[in-house]
Image (cartoon, rainbow, N blue to C red; front, side):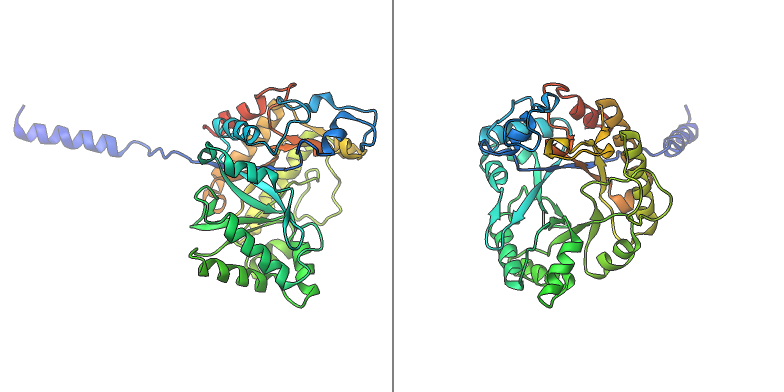
Length: 363
C-alpha cells in the first residue's frame, strides 16, 4: 500500500470511530432512610407481633418479620455489620439515619453508634436525617449545641456523606424548623448561617442542607431557596396522582399504583419549578396499621415487581434531568416496618426488593 493510501485509510478509520455515538456511563447514588427503632428492648417489636399492650394487640404481622427475626438487637455491631453488607452488596450507597435531638443530647442513637464500631463501614456512607418533628430547638443555644455535636461526632468521619465536600444534613420538617426559630426570634436562614460558620471554623467548607417538601410553591419557589437550603427531597408522599401543584387537599392514594402516580406528579412539578437540585424520593409502600392506623391509604402495599416500576420511573426522571437530580435518589425506607416502607430482607420476600434496586440502577 502506498503511503498516500495508508494515510487515507487511517483517516477514514479515525473518522469512523469519531462518528460513533458517545456512550457515557450513568452513575447513580442511591440512599435509604434508616429508622433506628429496633433496639432489642424496643416497644416497636411488640407492635409487629401484636403482643398485649401494643398498638395492634392480638393482630400480628408475620409478613413483616425481618430475615434476622423479630427482636434482633439493632444496637449490636454484628447486626449493623450485616445490614451494611446487605445494603452495599445490592447498590445502596448510603443510609440516612433518622436522628433525634432532645435539646441537649441525641436519642435513638444506638444504630449510628453501632455503625461507627463496625469494620466494614467503609462499604456504605451515611448522613443524618434530622427528625425535627418536635419543639426542638426551643432556643438558639439548643441549635448550636446540636451543631457542635454533629461536628464532634459525625462530620469529619470520612464515611460521612458529603456533597462538594460539605456534610449533608436532611431536614425532616422545614415547617417545624421555621416555626421553632421564629418562636425565639430567629429564622431558618440565620440558624443555617451560624451552623455553616461553625463548620468552616472546624475546617469544613460548610454544610449541605436538604429540605423535605411537597410540590408546593411556597416551599419550592420561595421559602426553601430564600432561607439557604441547598437541595430538596422528601421522606415520603401520600397523595394519588394529581395535576399541577400540591395544595394539601389531594386524595390519598389507596393502592400502590396510585402512590406511584402521586410520586410522579410531585417529581415532575418540582423539577419544572425548582431552582434547587432535587434528590428523587422513591417508596416501597405504605401501611401504618401495625402502629394503630386504619384507613384505605394503608393499602398501598408493593411487591418486588411493583416496587421495580417505582424504581424504573425514578431512574427515568433522573436520566431526563441529570443536572438537577445529579442522578441521586433516596428510598423510603430500609426498615420502616411500622409504616409499611421497607427493603430490608424479610422472611417473606428475602432479598427481592434489594435485587430490584441492584438491577434497575445497575450496581
